Amino acid sequence: MLHSACMVLSLLAAPFQDPDPRDEFPKYRPEQALVCMDRKVVGPKDRGLYMRHEDGALERVWVGEPYDALWRLDGTVFVCERWTGNVKHLSRDFKVLQTWDGYKNPVDVEVSADGLLIVVENGANRVTALDLESGKRVWSRTGFTGPFDAAVLPQGELLVADSGAGRVVHMDADGKILRQHRGLGFPNALESLQGGGFLVANWTGGEVRCFAPDGELRWRARPGGTLFSVERRMDGRTLVCDGGGRRVVIYDPKGRRERVETLPRGCVDFETIIRL
Image 1: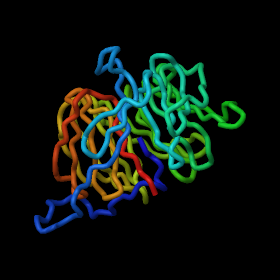
Image 2: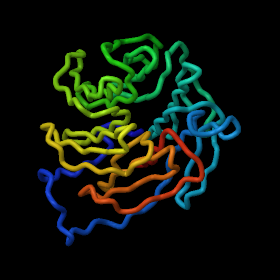
Image 3: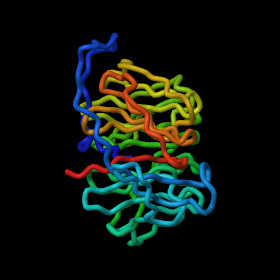
Image 4: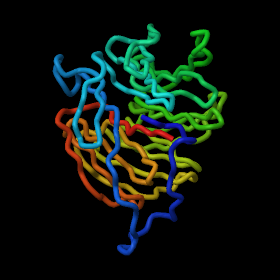
């Protein structure tokens, strides 16, 4: 997922209210996306990383067990393989450049503004940072219960979907908890928004919520199904991936359902490719 707040635009909306039917937004345009097909949703012959083209066609570009993928602006990709315990860096043509082993059920990979590799280890109940040049661990954040996602903020702060504890934790650059959002069921997918605030999807409740920087709920929607990922597009729309239901549900900047795109197979991560 592209969780960098520097790369994703957010709508600085007013507190939640009934949408004005006169509101108009730019026409939705499908874009390329990376799609991770994991053993949770597909059989052995279909596992791997896929490129979803604008016409909806899926092309497998790498065979492995990717649970989460991160597209970088240089065209390379980081993937974490949950069941084999590693993170890989892939080239533009999806060849393995480097592998980091020893992770315990890695389920999310991010890159911080200062170039650290951030990995959520679901099996170890922690989030760790790795220096890409030296390969040494820089820091580790613990105290979680089955975390599934994280979002790195520009100042080194961190949002963590502490799924087993039903909360989203906001930490400063030193790991101190600044704020907690509780009562979220099983929040397993996060997206930070530029200017503050975040999106969070609930795996068990089939719900997505949008929070303002002060923690106020802007809007909530119930696409249903089994939600694995959520993202905010550059055009202000929100994409929610129902991996079990093989569909992507798209909401306009006001949180109103706009359209549904079907996927030929199930997936655990859907990430629109942004090229600046």
